[in-house]
Picture 1: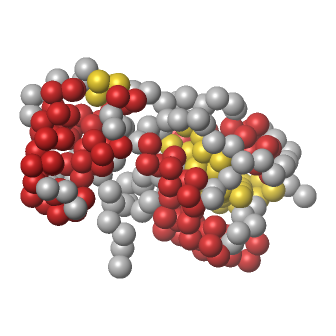
Picture 2 (picture 1 turned 60 degrees about the horizontal axis):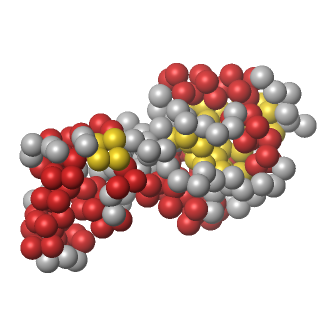
Length: 212
């Protein structure tokens, strides 16, 4: 019997692409294709899904990594492949912590999706060595330290230096040092331009608050 695949992606073109992968192989059949991670675990109930192709950032605020963690905890036999176009390194790190089966970058894939799907269903775990390299102003994504990325992520939420310091348990002077260093390193004209372009580049994504 073919494996049943759940596609979770808020982009129509991405869903259609993944649907075409499923249709191209007799090893798979489409269980469902949805645009929100909020209902992903519901589709996995009752053994209706063998494999999930899960995007991370959804327009409705739901998060594919949160959904993957829930599925992994409740339905450990369901295979999960995280798919994203965002090079934010925390996505890759958290996916490994959750214990998903594979991680696939949409624009910089090292292997075709069908090959990844087949290998995952055969029991392999597949992760890239590192996120794809992108630029933010004059700097490449590989030039930022983990602390700088933490500050940049919170900065992208629109927080003040004082609020960033409280969130990350840093001194105010340390936050100002990192923000000024990021502006200098990237050649941005202001913290606002830095925050906006950090999100546009995909180097970092503002944290989406979890629903109560």
